[in-house]
Length: 472
Image 1 (cartoon, one colour):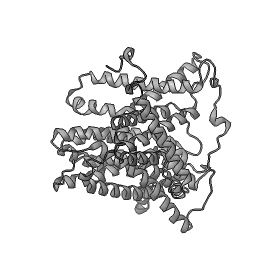
Image 2 (cartoon, one colour; image 1 turned 90 degrees about the vertical axis):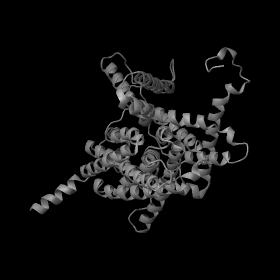
Image 3 (tube, one colour; image 1 turned 90 degrees about the horizontal axis):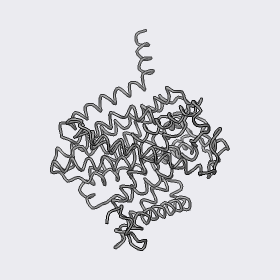
Image 4 (cartoon, one colour; image 1 turned 45 degrees about the vertical axis):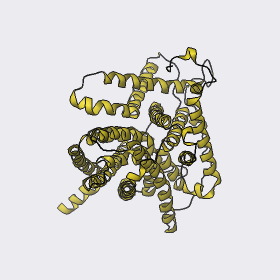
């Protein structure tokens, strides 16, 4: 029976419940994780996301005899993959405007910081994995490139490229559990961003560099946060939330049609070996581009008076993206398998530790020059995001800037498009590097040059100021 043979499907058969049961397991884990996060003082102070705690609970649950089969690993991976794409589509559909707190150049510079952090994470990871490969530790030489995918991008991209790396490794006779490697890095990244962020915050407070501020347990939303001007009614012939969900799904359907169309094209050796296999992993990027295009079309229709009302609701789209990312984190963590973990535990530990250290030092250094007057707010927001997700960055930021009085929150939210554009070369290299050892060395060289260029761009005022002074 195929998936379309609904005529012979009966609701008392396991197939009719399989997908729903997996989502029920995810929802239960998320609720339990949130209960632990709110009721256990240690976990509450750690600022670990409830979604990560839920995923860790499922990992523990899988360790019990007979329970492992209840959490379907392939389904968890599929949910992680699609939740990433749908979450980015929802974010792309939002009507974002640069507020007075953030200038366009500061948003671009923040995007450059995001991209350069991906790059330096990739450099560190590649150096470690190349060294382990050269000295015969049987680690895939390009494995370190999964560090920026796990730390910087999260479980979705770590899973996508982990599977691509596994394919290239197997073609060369190397056993490499890329998906588990990438997902494990992503899980560690959440812990690094939250725990190290909190520890450093407390150190700064003890030194008197930060003032302690209490925040409310729940963020209070204003009326304009829920509804903009001239929006469609909450419930008419169709519910407003239904409209938002349908728009997200429609855009994501366009992503599938476009990607499937590209797969049938003749694109030469590079397109066949690099672009086509990687394109399915670009679902989040294509979702962003198609979301922006769809939003632009709606604006044209509105100017031409073809449509009279505003269909996009930022508040609901935020909730949709938040749900997708929460589910993505739970499913991505639950999908981790430790069957092959013993083979790469040492390089994995070194890559994660060095990645955390370099990210911390680099982001702190750049933040001091990029965000004068709010360097620590800028640092905590970016460090949390570059090791976990944007939510981690916002959680850390709220501890020292509860009312978002500095531009740090706006910079974090608005930099996404700039980061995607500036970080696109890194994503292309992700499909090129694993093809051969030579390609990995070339990738490492390009990353070093690219990182230097981005760093000079962000530090240009300080560099050229010193140059002018020396000439005087």
